[in-house]
Image (cartoon, rainbow, N blue to C red; front, side, top):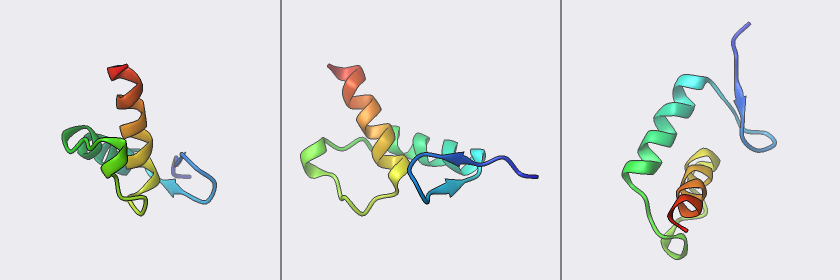
Length: 55
């Protein structure tokens, strides 16, 4: 059985892919008002985390 991470209902990804997406989100951080709402939910979640860290 493979472990999966669930960030939002209906979004299942493996842990390696999750880390890849979170790393991408940190490297390509974009202010909230400039983000594309179609980005992967994990990317948006990580950018929101970075928003909280900056405040």
